[in-house]
Image (cartoon, rainbow, N blue to C red):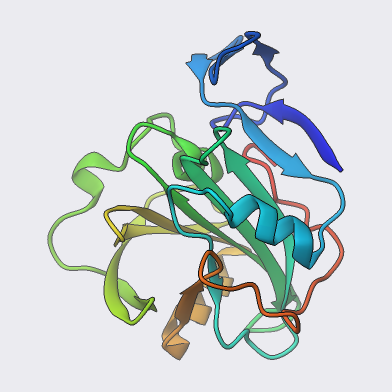
Amino acid sequence: MNVGPVCPRCGADLVVRPGSDEAWCHLHAAVTPLHHTAVLDHDTLSAVCLDSRVPAWVPDPMPAGWSVTGAAWGGEPGARGIVVGCSGPAPLGGQAELVLVAEEPGTGLGAGYAGLPWVDPGDLVGGASAAAVQAAGQRAPLWSVPTREDRSAFVGEAYGVWLWLVTWPATAAWLLAEDLVLTDLRDRVPPDLPLGPPGEHLLPGD
């Protein structure tokens, strides 16, 4: 079941323009509406990925005890941005959440999750990288993003679009010390992909 679209930058409810792929946010004006689902299953993930213009990244293998807990997408048909939420045991104890965002430039999704006021990372990407992941077999350097104390954020590029990883709490960024490998669910949604209850941070602004 899909839920009404929200702003990709702040999570606020939108005024949708009939017949248009844009909507209106009272804070950010015209934006690409972010849709999400209240019921997550493998068929829903497959449907979201079917005509997406960007990857739907998920850790592969999934860290022990982790599961996919949410999906969101910006733009229909042919998503310009896809969000996959995961949760599980934090590397340093307790529970953690990880949001992976792939988006075309100008969408503003990743910055929304990172709590940043702009749309694209700009000068944040440059100089020495802070971490890296393997994305569909290719090394993707990541740069640390200054953000709120309750989270950590990293951004890089893969498949020609932005790749964001945001974790709650901030210490869950230790996941990146474990040579995290990402696979694109557009290629295949494994039937044994673990799914869990909705996370707390599926939408920006949460």
